[in-house]
Structure formats: C-alpha cells, structure tokens
Length: 160
Image 1: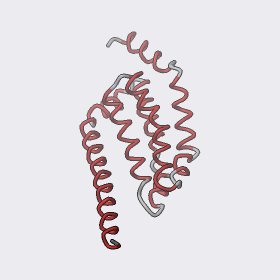
Image 2 (image 1 turned 90 degrees about the vertical axis):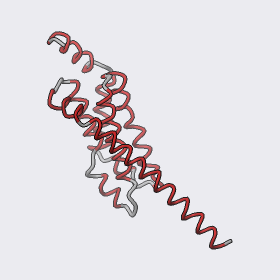
Image 3 (image 1 turned 180 degrees about the horizontal axis):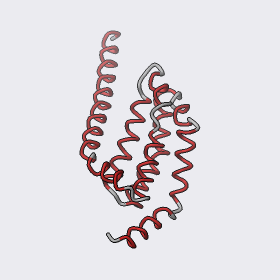
C-alpha cells in the first residue's frame, strides 16, 4: 500500500463516527472503574454486562478496520476480562481494577488506525496464540459449568 492510500485509510478510520465513541467507552469503563465496580454485581452479571459494552471494539475491528487479527486480539482481551472478573470471593473484582481490557483494546485500535507497524506486526504474529488462549479459556468455562452441574446433581442425590 503506498503512502497516499495508507494516509487515506488512516483518515477514514480516524474520522469514523464510532472512533471517538470508542474512546468514551474506554474512558468510562476502565479509567472511571465502571467495569470493575459493575463486577461486584453477583452471578457474573456485571462482568457479562460490561463485556456487552466492550463488543463495540469487536465491531470496529471486524467491520471498520476489517482486520481478523485485530478482531481476535480484541475478543481475547474481552474474554480475559470477563474470566478474571468471574474469579470468586471478590478476588476477580479486585483484579478487575488492574486488568483494563478496554484501555488495552483502545491501544490496539489506535495502533491500527495510526498505522503503527510495530503494533500491527505484534498483533498479526500473536493471532494464533490468541486463538489458542481463547479456546483454552472457553474450555475452562465449559469445564467449570460441567463441574457445577455435576456437583449440583450430586448434592440433589444426597437429599433424595
């Protein structure tokens, strides 16, 4: 891609109406700790609700930037944030104050919009690692759900 086309693409992305809204989402959720505070809502509902707000990054990566590698990296950060927040006994809520997935996602998007070669190369190199981590994390969630189901069925069997 020559410099004129690259500059045109960067301007198109930076002038997209969604781009400043991404900054607002990042600011509200992570810099003002709304994400971490919502994580206190029981049953993981706060973490899952905040993940829904974070899907705007995935939309931007998939449909505006049109980069599969960026989209996978954004999803990876969101899934990690949800799973960290689900750690029981408020440990996950405390860790959520330090793991700022929205700020990380905004940095990734900024790197792509500004054409930061180092950031783009790093994301492209780590795409398979990100996929493997996501599969592993989702497998852990499935395992935890199965364990809860099994424990509940065993508990019901004790009282039957």
